[in-house]
Image 1 (tube, one colour):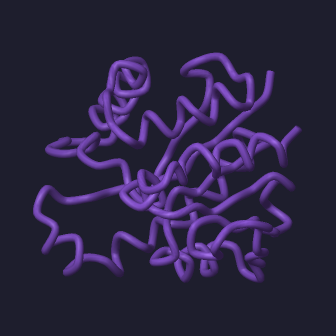
Image 2 (image 1 turned 180 degrees about the vertical axis):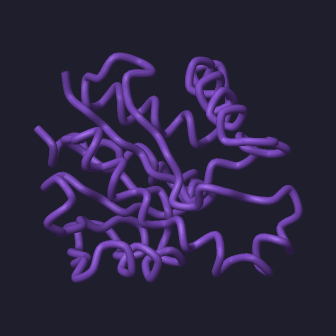
Length: 173
């Protein structure tokens, strides 16, 4: 079966108030099991990608660049440098999962973080789209079908989510 990895900016709340990593991972596993029951734009985009790529519903993997977030956004800003120290974990996840397709739903505001993790990362334009909305990514650690798309909030305008998910599916076929 096809392997899709979706990378968001962060996984909000899954690790909140955890006394240790084991408890945090248990929360993460529960979230993964019920992700098809969540009604949010993030899960809708994943569902559209899975349908367009003919992947069984819930058959893709997901993660975030940020592996830790606080419940208070101001603390995320204060501790941003420490949080970003863990960004390179994404490399290990990609090597371990061996996805055929990677979609970073991270927007342009996280491009510098991606460049730090993937030294020499190349952002290529996609015909018919604005660079800020979608671009193809090229790097030795990424599969050929790797994309960075805009943040979820920006995808819901003018059927951009439908156009982008169809474009990704067409590129990957």
